[in-house]
Length: 83
Image (cartoon, rainbow, N blue to C red; front, side, top):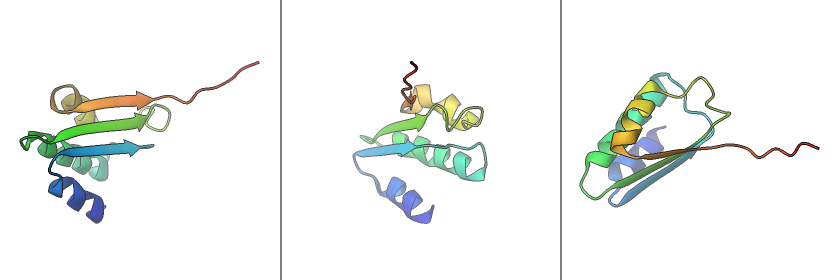
């Protein structure tokens, strides 16, 4: 976590985070705060892609609350083939 936090703080133009699980715990809350602070720095674009299944029922409330206003946030869903 330390190296990722350091990279987020040092970002000058963009932060792209893709994750399978974004838990509502101290780590998830810390990352949500770092991403929000990153977005508040002038000129830094923040984009988050998270897995819809991996975060089912656990997506950080902080991420949900600040994403629409602070940065771009998308969920990905696995494609399944039934047949």
